[in-house]
Image 1 (cartoon, helix red, strand yellow):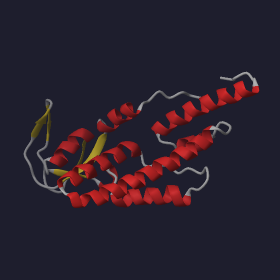
Image 2 (tube, rainbow, N blue to C red):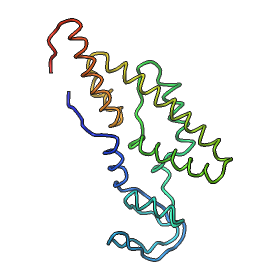
Image 3 (cartoon, helix red, strand yellow):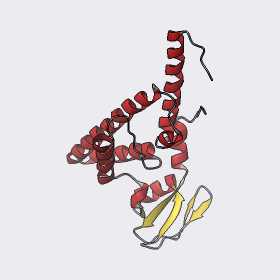
Image 4 (cartoon, rainbow, N blue to C red):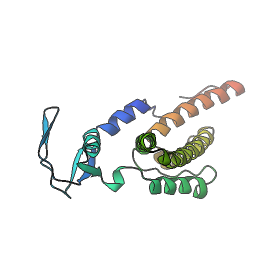
Length: 188
């Protein structure tokens, strides 16, 4: 089994430095960002920027992220419904690329909004509960899968990168434990 050494922090770094699509919501002149000039921005145009730059443009009110680049309440509900209601037992569904960094970002944005507007705390609490349900369900499924014989590549492809690290670690630990309990040689 190929051991993947990516950490959650590594995945966050990769996510923050990937190209992402934004759509300008107002015209704006050129901007110098760490020696790189971006813009000028024409209202309604779509283009790719590094995620953290896009985040700054969104904060400045110049642009918004393309819908498929961020999680929304609707997309989180769909993922929750699919994972909890449809994929029962050990069946596992595929998540959107960079699901966990997008989830952390979405929850952070909602929490910031709730700090400014207390009425928004209901939306944050609901999203946090959905996220916890999804994570608990995924953890349960990954633990079950990792205690079974080595899963097929088809099943492992459905796991996010962070989940593959967890799966590999659990699979190795459980296999070694089983071998010691049964006094069998661990095959590597």
